[in-house]
Amino acid sequence: MTSALAAPKRTGGYHLARQGKAAHVFLVPWLVGFLGITTIPMLASLYLAFTNYNVLAEPNFIGPANFIRIAGDERFWHSVRVTLLYVLFGVPLQLGFALFLALILDKGIRGLTLYRSAFYLPSLLGGSVAIAILWREIFGQDGLVDKFLGLFGIHASSWLQNPDTALWTLILLHVWTFGSPMIIFLAGLRQIPDDLYESARVDGATTLQQFRSITIPLLTPIILFNLVLQTIGAFQSFTQAAVVSGGTGGPVDSTLFYTLYLYQQGFVNFDMGYASALAWVLLVFIGILTAIQFALSKYWVFYGD
Amino acid sequence: MGTDMSTFTSLDARASSSVSPAPVPRRRRRPAFIRHIGLTVFALFVLYPLIWLVISSFRPAHLILSDTSIIPDRMTVENYRSGWTALNRPFWVFFANSLIVALGAIVGNIFSCSLTSYALARLHFRMRNIYFGIVLVSVMLPMHVMIIPQYILFSKLGLVNTFVPLVLPKFLATDAFFIFLMVQFIRGIPRELDQAAMLDGAGPFKTFFYIILPLMTPALVTTTIFTFIWTWNDFFTPLIYLTKVQIMTVPIALRTMVDAESTLGIGELLAMSVLSLVPIMLFFAFAQKYLVRGIATTGLK
Image (cartoon, rainbow over all chains, first blue to last red; front, side):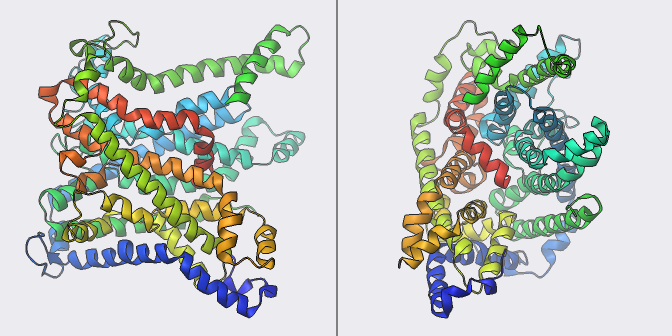
């Protein structure tokens, strides 16, 4: 981001003024969207969070009552626990697989494109309703996994109807989409200059030493990037839980993702004031978490010297 | 893809000429072989659910759950035939709806994001850095803090059960991801090109249409592909806005089929699920270069 003040001098003051006007013509769609689709609805949502609103009657200002209700809402805390479990296990496992496979594929392997395609395909499809349906059948009553484990004498009936295992099938689905962070890791690995490894080899560094002192440090910015992006995404997961549980978040709320609870309150119960409050809690939470990730990054991310 | 197919054949050539190998390749060959076996097994494991999905959709419904194999036997298209008409409307209606929404979103994103990104990448004005900062932050903004007032607005305007709430925001550059992608791309275009055009008297508009826009085709292709895939898969937004059967997109139609699974049967469900994935698979097969480039430069899904 170069400062606007650093504009090339030869364009002259008149030209700059004209560019400023032209820029705002180019920016009309974005400005309208930024105000009408983003900012004003955000402010409206903040206001609604302090009201009781069911669409039929006018919003009724009730102060912080929605937030007090949230603090005492067992299903809210439950959905927070479910979502945190999902993020805490799903994201590191997904990124771990992504990094591991990127490292294997990076070493000049033949057929890279084929492997990369195979591992990337699930990322493209993973968010679809079709794959959620597939997961229902794989882990459901008499499903594929059940049949398969039956061959070894393990009978768990339905993994989806058991509250202890239902969430783990969704975590597995998240891990299954390791392909897109893997491609980002591969692109990052390619950025590491070869001569670094060469001079390390000349100095007698082992493969493991090269990995620890070159590969990992130079990859940490990409790891942070993937971590932040995937965490934000995972907190907003909706489709898989909504389809697999049939929209309930069941069994016994064991797959009640935060956004699914928000959807139920807002668009099933039409308790839109409360749903707005939930949305703002989510925004603040994601904001704080991202800030923490960036703050902690200075202890482990290597930005070159 | 093509280059790697050729390396496969050169692998065979090398293996046969192993009479006089250099010492380093000899030590390396065994780990490479083991690595290929490991990767292939893992790839099959990863793709197994997808293969099973496709094969099962062609099996007689009562056999689907009792068969874990992926060997195609006793194939039938009956699931497809009955699934196609399982809901109130034939399935082509949902495909047409999804296609309209996806095309609308593509045109919208190309139009609005290219205009925005050109201004942010090339034109000089006071608020530029602030605007670009806003774009970056809005990439990470969860849509949940806006969706409720948006819904109220569109429903007050009588636009629920139309495609407007799904397509209109795209014409207003709300997919900030693509602005970011295009800004990055335009910054890579040599400035001499547009400066020459400007010196020849072309204003910002001519420079944009005749110089920058044609040069940013790769970024536009990436935007097209990802917009298509995201819109095609999108579930949350159409779930909120589309409640009438005749206006449903494919994911919502599938969800409706799930609700009726006890009466419909698993065969139809799997068959229509497979069909719903076909357009994405086509993009995957024919435009992979752009997909990979898009993810690698911006971290898209």
